[in-house]
Image (cartoon, rainbow, N blue to C red; front, side, top):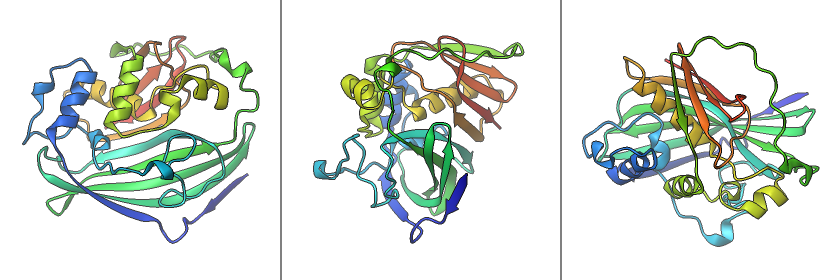
Length: 277
């Protein structure tokens, strides 16, 4: 069963920021590349606006999972587990590093589904990055809220990956190892207090996962970055969907076949699939 409702009062939010070079340089360091290759006046890589437009939140306004309490901007969904489910990015014109910009956000849809895993609530958020009065990036993010894990103790074992049909020969393949330091740095860069990325007792005992989870946005940026480096033309559009969790200290294989890009877990199962244009 699927129920879609309009968000209450069309929740909107606008944030301003100067697109300083430091977050991009720190992201390059996280990727083990020379931080000095991006500076003021350079175009911001697609998706890297996620490193900007962060505002401080009072400690008393944080929920038990480390995120800001719901109800101010995100709807007050009564499900405890939050995950980044996917989205779409579209580049209109470059965002220039070193210049002020504005991020306009709006809750577009709230959709509730009931399936084998119980209730799911999907919240779609539309965002536009505006610089010098002109839109530069348009995107839609989809966040999913899920019920509590019913058997957290049993969840500490990795599930067997489903059999994957024979895949075509990839055009390119890379490997990335997310360490605890990687997750810490990305959480700091994105001002993300979600405890599933750094609090081992919380993520295994409360949420029932097998270990610390890799950020969905980090996986998406790894795919975008690799696709851009292996493409003759700049990537201007990216649609992606998260399919399974990825865990700390387990290698991620990034694979590109035509316009399709995938992030694979260590057993070869697809954790995120996207398409670039």
